[in-house]
Length: 371
Ligand code: SAH
Ligand code: SF4
Image (tube, rainbow, N blue to C red):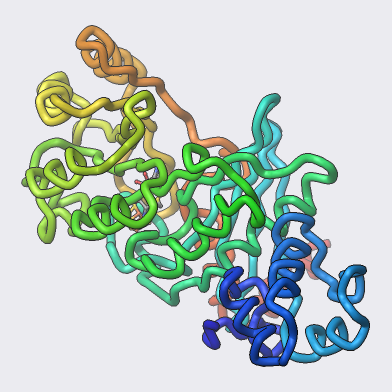
């Protein structure tokens, strides 16, 4: 059990942190039959029932004990924004008052949840607002899974069918908790998602990609953004640790399902990585990999000096890849009107929160005087 996961409202261990085996072990430690452990696990993750009083096939005495020993609270929602394009963004407060985020994207045939694995991120990519915050803390598996439980509540009848780790954080820097969460996502008695419907996006931590391939080969998305070592190292410091060649070796070893291959994220930045020369390097780099490239015009945020590529460079880049049989759809971040981009909403709220309260008071007085 991970005693780190003390919820904001409670000093008790978080119930959603326990795996099936851990629930069984807990039952044993309480002198109960191990099958009760499976019943509890099913109530939480398969049925989404989060009040032990409603666990109708479990005795009243155990229900009370569960309630007493564990925290059953979902994290607090600081704000809930709905975009014109149908996506919803929830800003969530952890037990220390830090903010992280999740984005829910309902489509006709699926519901995708973009979730966070850390509060902040230590990797410091220059174009990323989360990177500029630095790392505050890792989320526990239960806190990661709480985002799905919360999303299913918001969906009123529908359920999350696909999960992508593209919110805050570098998931492979929080390897154990992320893998534990993924195991519960795909467990038939847990959320029961297919392995093909869980995607981990990473900036390219080669050794952890190898480890992931061994323990739980879910789908992989690589934030590449440049196929030139010098430029990539400038944009993404992680490239100084694991350069493009090292990363490629891990990708070639990764047991991605043949039909699906690996997705590459490529943020398009004007004058930085969007020339035909850059496209050529990219095609060369991707040789031997079954690749799809998502071209993402960079999302702007205050303090970012870079600009999104012009439409004609985007088109030329896309055509260059397509002509060489590499699918390269242009993806605009969903929920732009609600700061849909990676780390953007949370960072915005942080700025507000860090305003000096006396300054806020003065501002309010000025506004009152004006009215
Ligand atoms: N740390 C992981 C996952 C979280 S970031 C990773 O880097 O893959 C999710 C995606 O958002 C990544 O592909 C990241 O490169 C991208 N991203 C970061 N800042 C962005 C911005 N300003 N505009 C568009 N995409 C951005
Ligand atoms: Fe971290 Fe990913 Fe942002 Fe880089 S792009 S700073 S790895 S969250």
